[in-house]
Structures are given as C-alpha cells and as structure tokens.
Length: 58
Image (cartoon, rainbow, N blue to C red; front, side, top):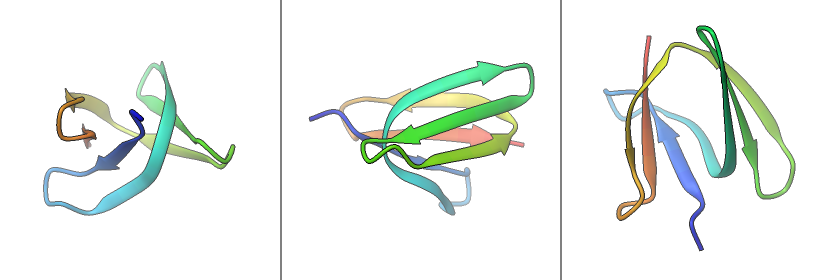
C-alpha cells in the first residue's frame, strides 16, 4: 500500500500510515488509514512514494 510516514527534516515523525494530505495555507492536515487526524504548520518540501515518506518543513 502507499501509506506515508510524515517527518520533519531532522527525522522527527509527525504522523504515520498517512493516506490523505490536505494543504490549507501554512496548515497541513494529515489523516491516517485509521482516520486519526494530525494538523501541523509548515510546508511540504518532499514527497517520496518509493520510500513511503513525506517531509514537512517549518
């Protein structure tokens, strides 16, 4: 499957098993496969589907 781990550039994990990402200005909503919602501030700097990760800066 294509669930993502969302991390900061330093490797800190913000959310795991993410299947939905919505950007609204400088706020990013991350929704997991189980429906858990995490909201973070920043911007997406990278999405790497092959390695199943997304990086958020800020």
